[in-house]
Length: 170
Image 1 (tube, helix red, strand yellow):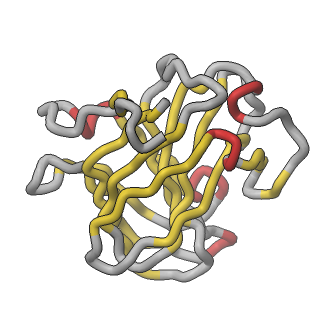
Image 2 (spheres, one colour; image 1 turned 30 degrees about the vertical axis):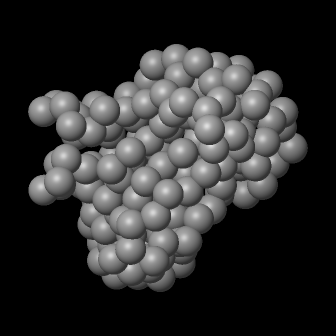
């Protein structure tokens, strides 16, 4: 797998890169978390904000605008990130899925450390409102139309995740 060519899912060096992502936080359900997506100083996308557990909250997320990502069952999602030591989720959203449904995988970042994470599609687990559910694997659930990053680690406070590359190996 490591020798396969990586096809970009997102181009972060584009001047409009941040506008191709949307923020979805717990305020959609009454929570108080805040987040933003912006361009970083090195051409990366920066997802940052403040996670709040107040009022039943506890998640902040960003996701790409919809479009067919053309993923196949043997593909591997590859992301280069610089984190803050917190645990994040990488989410895949499929066409026609119910509200608050995604396939996800958890990864841990090192504080201030750049790392590349690789996840075969088979490792993504189906969830709805953050709870595991029985569903077909991401590669069989329908076209993946969006990818996103989420913080929902149960720890209130500031966060920052820099994403400098996001692609598909396969």
